[in-house]
Length: 291
Length: 349
Image 1: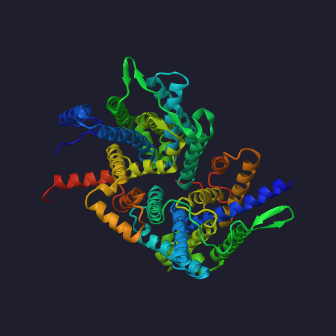
Image 2: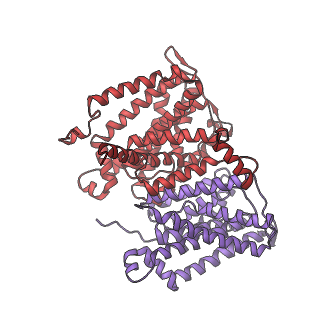
Image 3: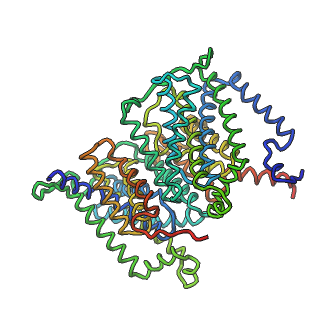
């Protein structure tokens, strides 16, 4: 029994980092319908930036992290402004290709600058520092990840539902021409979206970096986060978070009871199975295309 | 300029006797190439030819039928492992093992095509991506496939002909490539090809016109997977050794990049894209030995990046090419070619 609870708890912990990446992708997809494959690498370069500030410039941790978040937001805005906005005839494939291109460029620069080997991130919480509740042990870092994932989800949900900017983002997604007519500056909205999303991704990156830190560290969380976002319906924030936790828990239970070797692929099998029955994900309404 | 009067004239294989002439010249040049070239260049040509096969197959799916696949490395791996295992464990001859393995890949393509009937955009991307990753993981963990240690390719024998050098393999490979390209060209200009294009342009309209969407979408996946399987089977013999680490997500991305850079929905484009990216890939691996650019890069790297040299610069170059192509010429290299041709045909106006 303790085993089961332990596995579920670690599943929730893994799920939290997927949830953060999933949230980041959903935010962008919600407003601009771009499946952002560069999300992981945007988070990657932000966390390497934080590491550089900490190790080479000996900055205070809080200052360094704030600067890294700022960097992430600016990077997101810049990419939207300089690359995505310039696309001529945007269709889904074109957007996927552009974001994959961005991803490759960032990956190339990061691995050029920092090398491919494992780095250590001077994070204020030791990644192996843990506490016990009964027989179940919890890493402090995981608790932090969980709290930030849920906190960010609530903040973003409230933001999209009630704030003026959030409503403008929703309007941009639903009908950008009409939104522009009523005075929403859609270009600026899209740029802000990318900034926010990049910031959320950077939170995930910084929380992952104490345990693993090398140029490919974000691939697995990004793909799983994307999978969770798709499973949740690609436009629903709570959907992405719930799906991310489901994936994390199922993955851990599968690894514990059935086969540890196929642990990483089980998420994708679940995805394909879910999509076969609910092609628009679990939590989104299925729109039938009208002729 | 000669006038085209009906549809069949427009889709003819050779539009004029001059084209036939140049085609024969090209064939001759291709077959005579290994007589004059060094071994390394023959190896490069083999590498490029295999990628052309896969890119053409993927183009059928992405460019002509309008689906997305980020899992073609999976089919490629099935082809490679299938061919070697059928030859080594089941004792089939190469010429039988290769199509059998490709048919297995096509079967997987058919099954992956089934969910694609209801999925599109990012949903389809993640489903195919998951498929590619799953195949690599499964292959790496199963005893029969050699696990992490990989498999060695046996020698190819066709009747009395034993193929053990790159040059001999080139002859076999180029024959297969030409055959497959002609087959694809013909497939696209038949009823089946028109059905694919109709599905890409408007699938609901196509189905009202009597195009069986279920049949043609899965067929597109199967044919595309078949080509990737053939490519994989041949690639195993170029490398002589295969392991699961080769068939990564990056490989699927590279295949997609070839199709997109070359130009969606154009066979010439796929050929050009595959050639360009493969050639760049090999060149960029030792970029520091190129005069001027190499020195400059080394200087830049020492001052601003790392002292260990430039690794992974091909990612930067490929990424930039993909972004620029999508931003400025969505039709890819083929679009550039069309525009240049038009410019010179009407020159000096």
